[in-house]
Length: 230
Image (cartoon, rainbow, N blue to C red; front, side, top):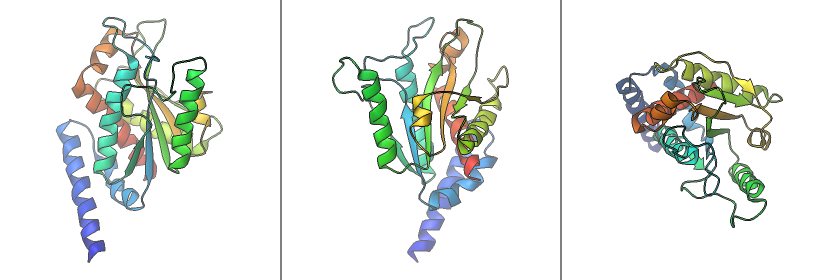
């Protein structure tokens, strides 16, 4: 009896998220696999990049901190996964960093703490949320990165990139890229870095500072990630 109730609750939750996606004006077809994936108890780690004295990239017009936007999008992403029944672990939930005291070597201490969190929860998937920058200020759009030595990481990046490319705000479709980054190599789990846009582009900066767009881009990442399990 309890099993039947659990299955019904998962199905109802997924249907609710599908309608939420439709309300956002986004395709929700990939969410059909969320119920079965969630019921298997999958653990999703959402890593909001930077934090504390490490602000990351600053917005070209307003000076908004990348670290703050990363956290805002990560919280939205966490909500989508949680509502679908996944177990979610966030590496940081506040504006602070994970390095302890802001002394020499804080950056490496911060990254090692993130690795420790990922390992301790036996993550089934790691999504690290960041924002991009480029000397060429016309560069725009979301970009995913994966570890070249990870086939599952590449496939996850392809799924999320495809979903980002489907967004109505996408001005140019991109392909996922391999990257030599600590957060991609610190785990055997499928992991990606999602650069949601370019802080060096005024139009992207304006979008990324908008809570509604933050929700939309988080939903696109979620939809792509769920399709990976399908």
